[in-house]
Length: 352
Ligand SMILES: [Zn+2]
Picture: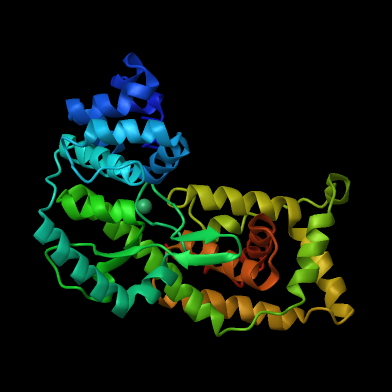
């Protein structure tokens, strides 16, 4: 079981791994013959299967072992041999888990039609959708890479799926998934899963649009120097430099945005005066144009606000933009954005 899923035994809840009772080298045969799993267990693991690991593990066995396994399975499939048994066994087990989870497998004809539709969608929208994911499977709970790395070569490995299967294949109803999530989702008509996928798509497309928007807007390169200085700060440098930022409450309502309020409040409290000192000093030395940076931050905020992003989204997108420009860790970029919230470039005063 550990070879076919990333779900740990603790997570299965009351369902114990049935393969614990059989000898390890016997388990695959036992499974195929028994051909059923408790539904709850199957549902818990069906979206988190790792057939590629099972294939690898079986292929690590000696040829004679694989030959025996293949012979044992020939009554089920006459084409089984030592070379294809790993892939076949993985396919069979995936299917058993899907059926046990209550998902009806497709017929060969249906599979073929589905492949054609997918190939067509991939050709038309694949590259855009792959970009939109940032290279990771956006299926809730997955997050696997959507390409395989082989030495210094990478090749894309993804499938394009409809999100709401009752709607048309417009770009906002399509998403790139890893092959495992894709295959399982094609069998799954759960409204809940569809809803989760819609939410994932919203996050992806907002981020993609924000990146595009901010891409066309400049940011002072001197920000790298500012962050470098922030990184060097020691606790003793910050003694006596604290600020009680009452103004933050005017821009972020702790009742509505507690997490971001807390973070910004802490950063401003701890760093604001020191960051201001750093900015002024680098401005004097011509390393950063402080006024220009203020205008840029204000423009980032205004433009993202127009797109109706939430405060957390706006904060994250500006942090990400600074990260892309500076390649500095997000945590330092957050300190910079918190600074510009306090100094009034980011977020407006809440009107009650
Ligand atoms: Zn996936």
